[in-house]
Image (cartoon, rainbow, N blue to C red; front, top):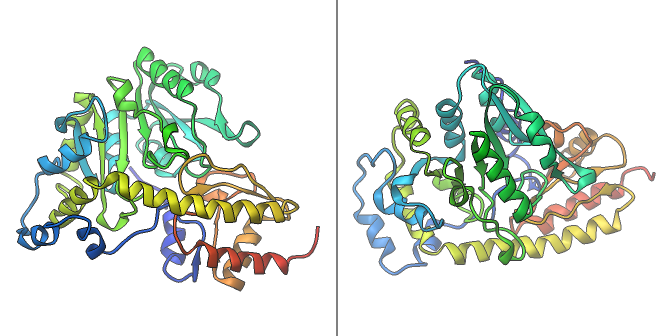
Length: 372
């Protein structure tokens, strides 16, 4: 297997720690270790007592129990802890697929959701989300896409980069279709819990389908990317077993301090999610106002969930927009090509409290662009 460069991650490797204003990142506002430990009496002492030995390969029993409580049909034995979401994606693609298999992928998407399978010799069939439909994919296309050799469906909901939230009836339809066709549904749910309002949260795929695999991570909803803790939850014993076996060739086990801190965070999951949603809601008001003022320059489909959106630039080349905003104002935007999109879109991220300063820089740059 020979993987091509990961376009988005190479983009961030070059710019993320050099740009003054990050207006395209997909995580939520983080916090210090001290702030997290202060949420719970005794947590700091527990961390100091922790011995820095190896951890259990599937994740500590207490962490897996905390993750299982995020679902309704999941036990700790149905959970595999990984190093962020990226390792989980890699493990799944190699555990569930073989060369020559067909995988149907919800697109545009985070590159590894398609590229790992393609590089392993699989045929990747796009299930396109279209802006004219509010970024909804068409469920009527699935029977045609799932032809001979189809093995899996990859769904991302809430969706990155568009912020689309699939209606519950359609989500259940996709889960049911996958189960009836014998397809493994890999459901990327890293933004679950960031729906607005919260009562509109979808069920997890693992709670609806016996063979579905739900992906989660501490980075997004909980704002703790530095922990590098992700997981899959699935009742599909064969896929889980194979993922665990392949993990022996990648990270083997997670970091002990990260696991302990993740346990603390999960005991306060609702409070952390509320914190993230509050920042997102405040920032969306500012974004709505900017795009309303500059309706001549942007088409804006307001996201329904998560900390990212995918506006379209109407005033010329989106590559020039992104390049100019970075060079002149230090504002980092992510052009749509990084997600396989060719429609002049770019990703904007609004999960951090630094957004007002970033927006001010972007607006200064826009004011200098030629009219029309």
